Length: 244
Length: 107
Image (cartoon, rainbow over all chains, first blue to last red; front, side, top):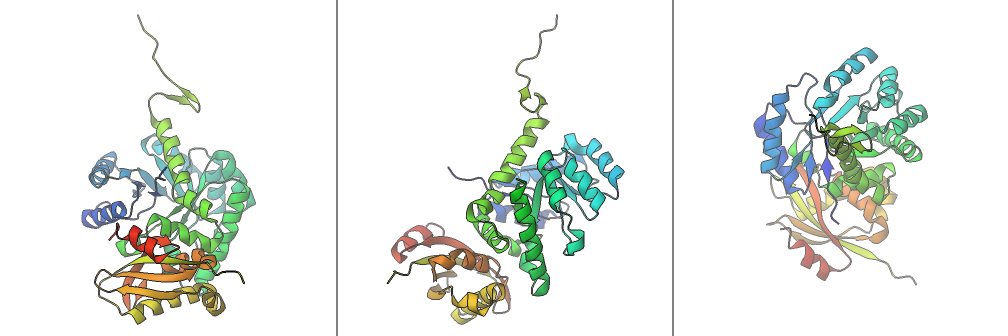
C-alpha cells in the first residue's frame, strides 16, 4: 500500500495567493497527499475555504492549522477553548517552560514545536515527553533549519534534535517531520525529507512514519472528533433517537 | 573477499542555470563533507556515472552502507556552482539497467 505523505507546515502567507499557489503545485508535483498552511492566530473561517479549493484543484487534501505562541497559560487555555472545534490541527509554539508543560498536558493540543536554537529554550525533556505521551500530543520537527544553517549552529541543532528524538522514542511520543519552508526552492520530496531524519538518529522506518503515518493518524483522529456524530473516543452516534 | 555492494541513484537537479559536472559534484562533496567530515565523506564511495545537462538528470554511484548518509547529504544541498539549487532522488537501484528502466518514468 502506498503511504500518504504529509507536509503539515508549509509556511506560505495565505494572503499572497501567487506564492501559496506555487507551493501547493510543487507539493502536488512532489507526491504529497496532504498539506497544511498555518493560519495566524486571529484567523477568519473564510480564510480556509480558498486554500482548501486551491489544494483540491491540485489534487491535494488540505488540513486547517494554526500555530499559536501563547503569552501565558491563560492565553493558551482561552485560545484552545475558542478554536479547538474550528481547526483540524493546533500547534503550540513553546518558548517558555510553563507554557510547554501546559501544552503537553492538554489533550486539545496536537503538535508541540520548539523552534529555538538555544538549548535552554528547548523544553522537550523527560517530563515534557511523559506529559505529551499521556495527552497524545506529537513533537514537530521542521527541517528548514537543517537546510539553511551551517557550521556550529547546525551542529548544536542536530545535537538537540538527536536528544529529543531519543526521548520521543522512549516515551512513544509521535514525531512529525515537516518542511517548515516558505520558499519553493527549499521544498523536498517526502522521501528526501525523511532522509534528513537520518542526521538526528531516526531509522528509515521511523523517518518515513514521521512524514506519513504519524501525521495521517493525527489528522484522522481530529477529523473524527470534529464530526457531528462523535461523542467520545470510541463512541460515535450511529442513529439519533426518534422524537415523537 | 566480501563483494562490495553499491547502489546507483538517479537525481533530478533543480536550479536556474546549467552547472557543469564539476560544479555539481563539488556541491555534493561539499555537502557530504560538511555533514560527516573528510573521513566520513571518503567512506561513501561517491562516483559520477552520468550527467545529462539538458534534462538535468544525474546518475551517481555510492556504497550501499553509506546510502542513508549520502541521501541526507543530497537533500541538504541548497546551492550548486553559486546558484540556488535542490537535488531530488528520483530512483535508487542496484543495477544501472534497472535504474534507467524506473527513472525514465519520472522525467
